[in-house]
Length: 125
Image (cartoon, rainbow, N blue to C red; front, side, top):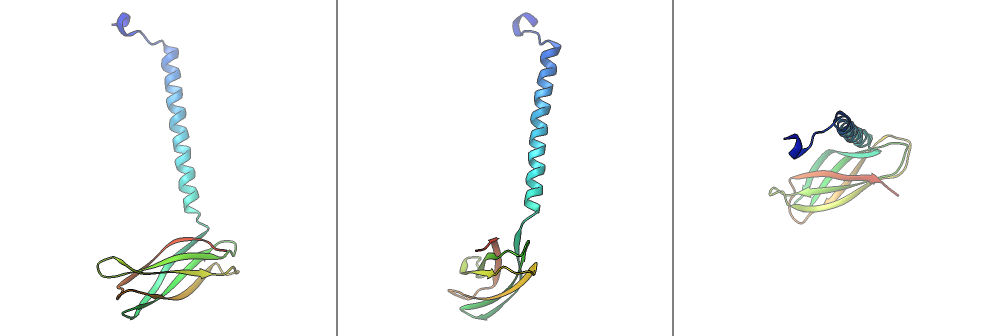
């Protein structure tokens, strides 16, 4: 069999192990960095409350968090009972010293909304 497939020398096996270990360490390092970077979000938003004002309006209160006093913009979506989007708006907090800011917004809807959600928070201009 050695004549047919060749025999790997101990140096070749050692080199293969070193290369595999290097690739595994690089992937683990990248995974750790990605998890750390995502956990340190500079801005964020959380739906504090929502109230259906009428069949075409929803009032939402959003808590916006920020680091370093920067401005924040988040997208707010109102959904109907069938989970379709019936209204959208952006909430903004201007730059300031508070790390958490509560913002109230009224979203106009196509029909009655039953829930609301906050997404896509980013530093604002």
